[in-house]
Amino acid sequence: MSRVVATARRWIGTPYVHQASVRGAGCDCLGLLRGVWREIVGAEPEDVPPYSRDWSEPEGDERLWRAGRDHLRAKALGDAAPGDVLLFRMREGAVAKHVGFQTETGAVATFIHAYTGHGVIESALTAAWARRVVARFAFPTEIE
Image 1 (cartoon, helix red, strand yellow):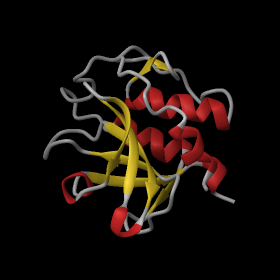
Image 2: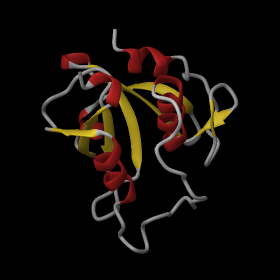
Image 3: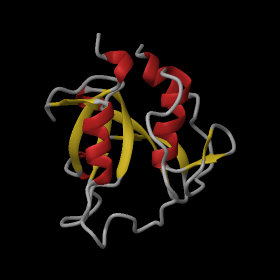
């Protein structure tokens, strides 16, 4: 099993807390990514400033996509592997600002993410979710 997947699964059950990134205490989707990064890689590569729930939308700034390109390795959307970081656009025309980790591939594809009202959960990567994926990245430890 991918080290990223094993680490992300330890976060399941963490409550959803906007801007937090502490396993067991609370996190949002970015906080989940940040927490898994710290557990596997170490110090975060950049400071994350405070952000609102609608961050980046007024400017149309693809901040998460840019950070993914800066700190992860971009992959083709169809090149799915456990441990990949998935970037989602939650509605057409909006900036991409939801992230999760691919956990299973194939007919029973799944991913782990922090979702408002649910906390950190493992969800089926249904067609409704899959069509929202706009980028896929390899986590640094999965690149070798």
